[in-house]
Length: 555
Image 1 (cartoon, rainbow, N blue to C red):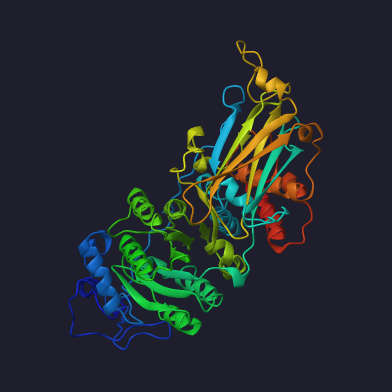
Image 2: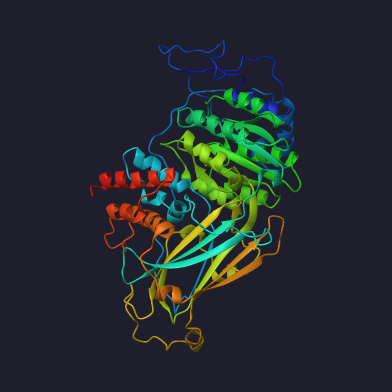
């Protein structure tokens, strides 16, 4: 089928450069085909033209800026990049998983440093695989994103001066009687709707041919329309789209009806000039920048960029340049078959935003409705965690997850090193598996180990020191929080219960899906039993997923 849209991709680029065209066909829309649409299945469609060059939208030069400004002047609500149907290549999903974190000997490496992570996309993506009757690829699973998908009973911050609380607790490890679990939990302060700053949001929507299936563009409309309903009178939304080229389809507005109408007019077709769209979105956000407010792009795509800038490294460099200007990036992943999860997760992290995967209207409601403040409003940035274990109490340790968030020890005190951000009401959970001193660990004792350091022996009442660095949203200098974890917590450690038991079950599920060889045969049935009975819908769903995964694995 060949659908003829408003303007060819070549003409779109000409318009963005300041040219004009005298013949325009009616636009196609969700409500019905354009009047000149051709749908003759007996006539093979002509080969699509080669992808047009896109430097006018990509280059951060004066030419690119002129092109963006031209788009502002020429685009009208309802403007559509031409919907030319293209085939997608199933089975081209891209992931860049890391190896499971190694075991560390405390005497040799007492310090563990990592950036916080509030992304949840890996959990929703794993759910999509399991619900569809297959276990997810190991590289698609990041245990910390499974753990942080759920909320836990951490204390609320008492004041905004310290934007989050720190909770630590220790329990016996369900899958290894010789080890213990140390849980570190952060909780950010909640932001009341009356107290939140104004938002300048740019919806950047992929309308290329790969977005035509029901789990992509139709779900994008549902997700972003739901967010439009959460806006306040001080907020503004613009909509930018891209396929073979990029264009502005909605000038800034806070009218939910206009936003929904613009979303409803979108249809899919053409190649994917994602880099061009991203650059235009940054230009639009910059033109409407709100000082002291939230300036954020929400990119909705399957990540299948194939025109212009398309490799992860170049995209990361682009978003890193732009984040310093105060414009952040949230990525919302959609669809199957050609999904580029590696790109989605990485550019969100480097763009000081967060990454979520939307596999249903319910998940869209959770991410952009129930958790809108967490998704959009940053309360602390460049948040880093550093844990120093006392070798008098801990002989070995490993961190469950956070492999792609690991930092060097010297990065902790370096304010120039970028790290994760925490949104209003966000929670962050990290779980270490530790070996008590004197207990049998994963690594045999070394023949030539040095004696225990005197400093460690003199602080035998301390299990570890937890340090956090963070900056306020408008700050450039970090602040420090320090907590000592008393050794008595390990001495009194019992099997985890309640919240801790559920968090441990989710961690075990993630590690099992990743093929962690140190889970000692801890089965899906063991995981479900550890999770216990739950009243929360999402926790109940987790237990059902574990059961399905058990049947897929065969026990």
